[in-house]
Amino acid sequence: MKIGYARVSKTDQHLELQTAALEAAGTEKIYKDRISGAKAERVGLDELLRHARAGDVVVVWRLDRLARSIQQLIELMKDFEGRKIQLLSVTENLDTTTPAGKLTFHIFAALAEFERNLIIERTHAGLAAARAQGKVGGRRPVLDKEKQAAVKNMLATARTNRAAPDYKAIAHVVGVSERTIRRFDAGTYTSFANVQN
Image 1 (cartoon, helix red, strand yellow):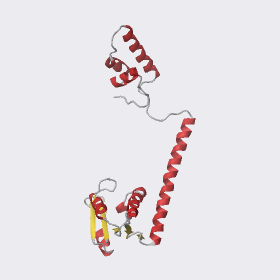
Image 2 (tube, rainbow, N blue to C red; image 1 turned 45 degrees about the vertical axis):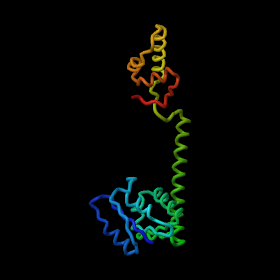
Image 3 (cartoon, rainbow, N blue to C red; image 1 turned 135 degrees about the horizontal axis):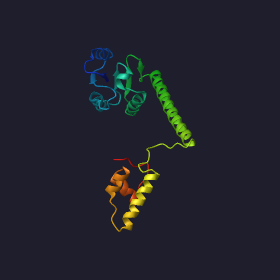
Image 4 (tube, rainbow, N blue to C red; image 1 turned 180 degrees about the horizontal axis):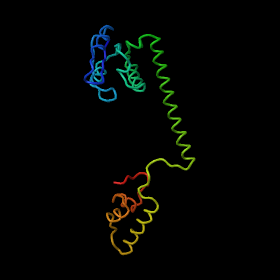
């Protein structure tokens, strides 16, 4: 069975061009969405995925109607492949029911994987170069060395006077949250895991 999927990005756009092309391609049912492809929730596509069965062919006017990125398209295609569902794009003339169509799609997938690996490799190289220059990533510590010394002194003074530390007052003096001071006093404070409240 050929199942169509049509999507427009804005509510003022019309689906007629896509639906006419899908009907001409022999689709028996067409699922529709009027929403940006960037949005994760697409009711029409979700419904199509629920009803599609092995041997069905999902027909789209263009691949960008089905997915907004190569990665998203590849994820959908993996799902289709696992469920023995084929894909036909009218405009791009991509038909995974044919050997040539399958080959074309696998080339797309290989290029996307190659691009993803390059990005990961460049990111790791950039982080290693930054570390070599003494730069450390992540958040700045809430309690720098100077503030840690001040907190230690205030906690020691309170204990010398045999009084319970006033965490709220100490936090106010150094400009951090009371929780940060409590964690510092308990020995569970880690400089990059805290955010000032």
